[in-house]
Image 1 (spheres, rainbow, N blue to C red):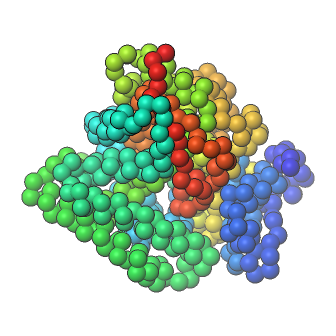
Image 2 (image 1 turned 180 degrees about the vertical axis):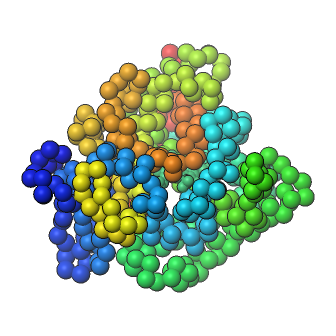
Image 3 (image 1 turned 60 degrees about the horizontal axis):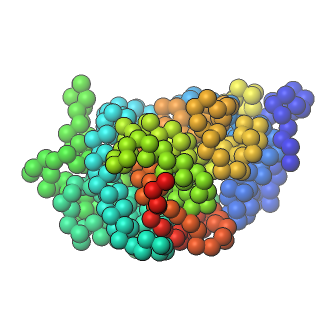
Length: 464
Ligand code: HEM
């Protein structure tokens, strides 16, 4: 369906959001519960104004035009604060950066930002290198003519190993590393439940009540024990782990994180950095396997750099096609498929649309990244659109896999380093093919993931 353009409609019509009627009492809840991303895409197709709909008794707006996205993200607080879905995560992540608003958020962002600057994250390059080396080494022993790997498991383990080493150091015992791996899955499952229920119940039930599931509490306790153990041992002998860096952070005016804050940040960063990056990596491998021509270009680009040397981060800057390939993956399969804000007062967007006080505002990369006004053949996987000099994206906020404005993902440089290095190295050494040509669908949890484990046939790449 063609959307009403920004210039269409009478001015009085265009001065208000486009309202979509839903079921009595339930509003759009059944449609969203049945197919979240599909429903949001259908809503956005109706009009380029904010689209208003009801979820039970509360009002929500989908803002899908890049101009609207830009306004919400860059105007930020106090008009647009993190909303109810975000606060539902407090049961797991306490008062951490990702969940805070106002002065508390500003204080933490100022303290933590220096650790995640592009230059700073290079300190983690050896950790990524050695973990990818281990993976490549392990795969090298497989049958050169082809063997099957479960890339979902492999990618998740790789990112978990990298994140565990960054956070807790090299010498974490295998038992604790295993415990961390197990709790990640159960906390994620439980969190999605908390996430959905709080959306429906709109905070009318205390988060603590929502999180009374035994599995969730046990998983969280196990993880907190791992964090506490690490804090205790590093207090005796500080190391270069991220936990220690959190502990030792000090601003110019002497401000520091308290012990509870260090613990909350450790938990939040661990989880924020895991599922998002691991799922992006799974999708990237999927596209490598389904587009051998692009995989060949990535391999050639990596090999051009130096015959004997595999790409690392400095070189990743000189791997424009690999970078474009990762960007195109994040465009079509953005792990953070929807961002949420609360309109803290009655406000207007530039397009003139008033938004009700306390309404939920949804911005969805999964929707905006596929709009035909901004992307040619939006459903096609075509990395060249991101190569420098190309026209896409036509609008800065037509592409926002890491959000934007002051709250843009603090872990972006780390995530890109992990993705580019892994894809570059693996494509240089191996060829991948899908085991079958069954279409892989989307599954929405806390992040966007494939609807099943992806199996790939792996072959040693022959020198060109
Ligand atoms: C491909 C991987 C990743 C994606 C797609 C992603 C996406 C995002 C997005 C969209 C936001 C903004 C949310 C909003 O505005 O509501 C965000 C925030 C955040 N991300 Fe990431 N992220 C990724 C990796 C990471 C990593 C590796 C870390 C840390 C190790 C991390 C830590 C955070 C934190 C702490 C915030 C909150 C920042 C704040 O509110 O100031 N993310 N991420």
